Length: 133
Image (cartoon, rainbow, N blue to C red):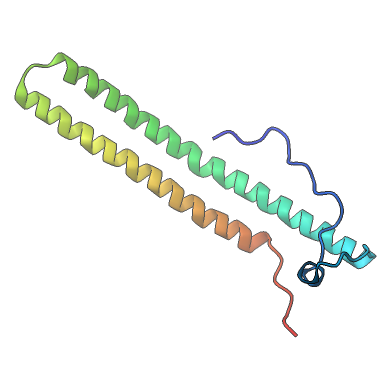
């Protein structure tokens, strides 16, 4: 998976507050809301950075393991093409099925780890919701 070479464009202007979004009103930027918007943008940037780092640390090794399994699968497929012995054919097909299952498990494990890591990044970098009055 290729990550972006350039960061995404920053949104123009401060984000409307929750109350303004609910009523559809646009409030003028005040120093407090600008600071809050700046903090929110910094938190979003930190979350994106966290996700990019865990993506590389999870999918990189996983893709390497899948690549090794696919190479083994290719080798077995070449052997299957060259053999005429029914017992050998069955043994190769069984081993190929096992390798396909291993690839599927590896993808599933990587996706599960990535979902957990995304959640942890969000919990770590998103600000706590404001208290309800």
